[in-house]
Length: 283
Image (cartoon, rainbow, N blue to C red):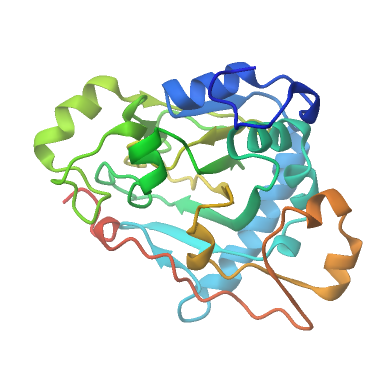
């Protein structure tokens, strides 16, 4: 087992050996499982994302800007035909258990869509560093990303600066935005990611990253699955819900980790998780 594995988690609690992934998350802040799903599965994911995106853009508060021509939309699990496949994937379950412990909670389902004309985002993390991470160098949440397209160089690939999940400075705006004087450090470390349909990545959302300029006429939709450990509070920014019929249809193993309201009728999500510093792009 990795020395960073959550205390009390034994190897037999995991479906697959993810010790190398846990090491990568602590060392680099990101890891991935290539070919976790078929390209056809990812194509269905894209259909569901596009339907949800059209619906969200047709109402106030449905889609939130993350920079020019770049949107984030939070959705409900049952809007995705492949939700259970993802939440119950052996690699996803094992990474969550190993890093966050057996009581991890799925608190967010959403997607990012950089469209034609999206510009470089400022370097950022998705929320301020929690005290457990600062004091104990421990990760308390994870973000899983699943691309709905094969990523090409001109489509504004995701860029990440490995090892920066521990960066901590009073100069960070809102605890999330490093000042421009720090940019050379991130540019020197920057790695662009080119996931293909069927790949899954897992990262600490504290690792400094950005979306880059989309030079193509294509969109690059990416699903986000947000997972908290017991002490994390990211769920407070999200409004995930399921209908009773859907809840009853879920495997017990998924229900145990899905932290959401069970309702009679789903209401479309009004986005709460705005990140003000991203609205302008890297001005």
